[in-house]
Image (cartoon, rainbow, N blue to C red; front, side, top):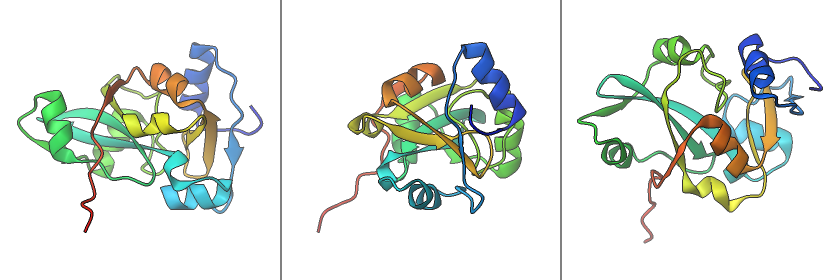
Length: 161
C-alpha cells in the first residue's frame, strides 16, 4: 500500500491477501462528488457503501456514486417488511467505520451485502479505504466478490420527462 489506512481495513486486506494502492486526499473524499473530483473520475465510478436496516438487521448496499438507492427495491430484494437508512451510530457499530469512510468489505460485523448492477458498467471503480480521505481502485467484479455481495437492481430509477 502507498499510504496508511484504517487499521481494521488494513487487517482485512492482509486477511484477504490483497495488496491495494490506497490513495489519500487531504481535502477529503467523504462524499461521492468529493471523491470523483479528487480522483478525476466519473461520479458513477465511485462506490458508495451504505448501511440500511432491514427489519432492524443491518445490510450493506453498494451503489454507484451517481445513483440513489431505491429503498423499496432493497426491501423487495431482501423480502423484508421495512427498510430504513441506518443512523451514524449503527453504521459505526456495524462496520467499525464512520460514514464517509466505509469500505465495501473489511467490516467489524459480517452483514448481508447487495451490489447494484450499475457498478458493472465500469472496468475500474473507486471505494473508500476506511477513512473519509482514503480510496482504492479495483475492478467491480473483484470488489463485489470480496464484499460477498449479491448482484441486484436496487438503483432508484429517474423518470424521464
